[in-house]
Length: 116
Image (cartoon, one colour):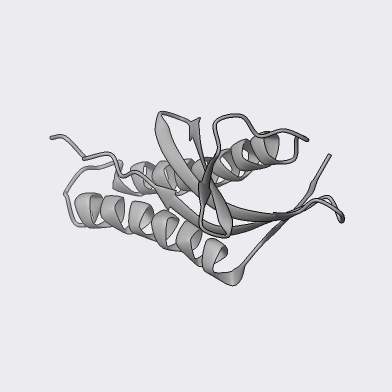
């Protein structure tokens, strides 16, 4: 098994996505006049945290294994696409085989449109 670590940039990529996810629903449901507005917003806050945990778990499950199937060489790094909760996650990482370590450098997450 490989040890995983995340760069500041990878953490920021994930944080930016989750913040945008939360703020999109806050904007949509704030001052909507719906009697259960607070409950709806809390549910989306919980969904955002669940999504974040799911993304991290999926990346960990895929990249801590000795062999990563489907990866592509990207200059000095590798690219791997994983899927969780209906979202494609593009992960850029580097590895040190001697130390059995992989460093997650970037995380790209597709954004689903909100359909009304």
